[in-house]
Amino acid sequence: MIVDENLPLGGTHLPTSNDMLKVLDIQDGNIQFKDNCVNYGLYKGKRCKFIEGKLTYTPKACAKCQAQNESYSLYRNGTQLSRITLPMSGIYPTYLLLKKQRFMCKSCRATFTAKTPIVKDHCFIANTVNSLVLFKTTEAQSIKNIARDSSVSEATVQRIINKEAKNYQSYDRILPAHLSFDEFKYAKGQLAFEYIDAKAGDILDILPSRDGRTVKSHFISHYSLRDRKKVQTVTVDMNASYTGFIPVLFPKAKIIIDRFHIVQLINRSMNKTRVNVMNRLNTSNGEDQKKYRRLKRYWKKILKKESNLSYTNYSYYSMFGQRLEAAIVSEMLDYDLNLSTTYSIYQSIIKAVEENNYDKLTEILNKKIDKNISSYMKTSIKTLKKHLPYIKNTFSYPYSNGKIEGINNKIKVLNRVAYGYRNFSNYKSRIILHFNMKPKVKKNEDERQKNTCSAAA
Image (cartoon, rainbow, N blue to C red; front, side, top):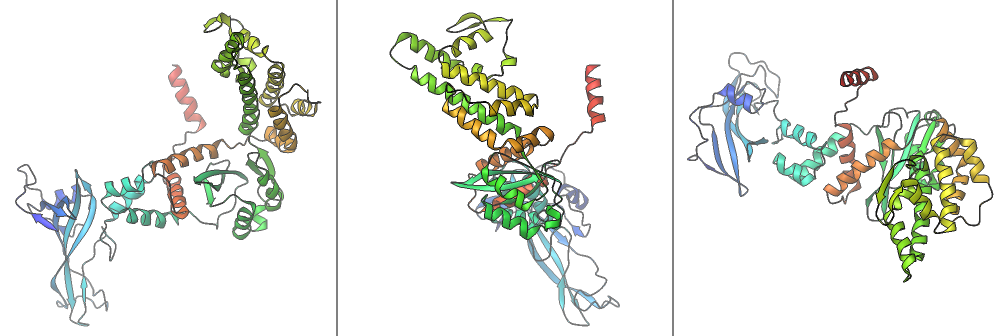
């Protein structure tokens, strides 16, 4: 450590001890600062700011034998210099060069050093730095950036995160009545399993694998059968493995298929049908090329809900001219019988799901499949028929995977910002802290209505 005392702080004001305590957010009045206590220098090859201070007080008893300080039985015995890392002040890493008073006891002849609440025993990183690290974990930042902004190493940042995350990973709590399952990718070819409280949206735990053996072993080892019987619903996507082990783990729970995945399934089938027809029209024939370009450009119109198409307003569409939106969709459907037949059942399923009409959906799926329906849609219909009992619960309960999908999107951002995680345990700790330490702003219904009325006025 090289200190250059000839480099001035700047300005003519000489800071007092009280001013420095306020500037550095130090609550210990036993630390004293003299004028001109700030210097610049080099540490580990970097330009830094060094602040000199002294910690001294009159102890009431010996820290070793607990003998009371009477008739000067405890006397001062030199000082010990500690370099304490502080939150960065300005643009340079900041260190407190603290001279701690040492004391000797006449009774036991032992020595001890003065203590301060700004740093833990045998530690040289201020508590405020630990708080800064934890605060920054709520933001989408890499460990490397957090370490740079906090003037500590990356290993120190991860150690602080892992230690704090243990406070949030407790299995002595009771399982909520409504759960939500999903998975996310955290490494190449590896999917992690995640389950949350479907009502509150709180992450309960994350497992390194989504296979049935890992999930069953986790729930059986951490939650009793009595607790698992209290679970009323479990919301999942159409993953076959989930529907296989959920009845074993949660005997009284209803399985809910997420509404979004139902719509997404048939939406993809419809789009694949359009692409298949479009590619067949990609020939040297001029008329086929015209149809090909139309299907390629206006693909969103075909996937759009029929009730949202415009039947009254004329607009200009390239390759069509001045037309109604519904008219151009109708014309594109006439290009191929498979396309129009698949579109018809696609729209009927969308409408039944939108209206929560389980009987109508059952009628559509159990109807004899038209031979002109595309193979993609036939496969989707078979999948929906397989999950019909669970889809009935979808229409009966208000729960969905919306909250867990939102959490997964933020997890993917963390993974991308950090350029991936090699260690799953470290990744899990970061995710747990990122969501649990972030302040949650919740408005009740009265406040929301009040704000709406104020805006209207």
